[in-house]
Image 1: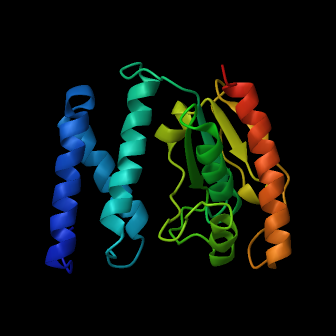
Image 2 (image 1 turned 180 degrees about the vertical axis):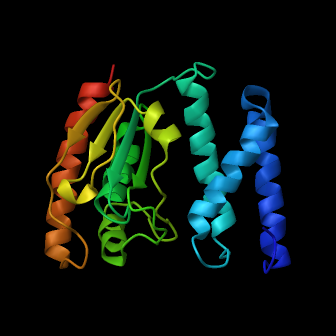
Length: 213
């Protein structure tokens, strides 16, 4: 797996693997930690070489997957509800929803996003610019593929219209579908309208799942 990698990438991968072993070996075992990390790397690498950003993204994805697996098996308790935003590419509406919920919930909800197409790409530049207007920085944020561990651990899955595509949602997970405009390539005024539409929906869901005391 290290063939063709720079020394810096190899070192980053080694450090990421060690961090994951330190945090999850006791709960899930070293073999599972290695298997999930290697699978995450393969999903993110695709057909090309491992880019410099992939080790950090692979560690984050693996951490989410291992945490989800541990919670699903009852090995790790949940302190707050978990909401998963799922879109096709995870570069637009899903990222907007997740970022707004993280900002507005103030730690009362654990939030993640993922894409059904499995591609890895940075957040849409227009989306990043629109979110920056409300104090949310998405530059340097990349999409992540949808994985079964994260899906199983969710309490609520929010999909972003029919473009999300078909995938199986566990019967124990609540499914909410939001029909929204497509922010890809949209002009600033349309992006702002979509952002405010998502914000209103996010606020309503937060009030339902984790109302303030």
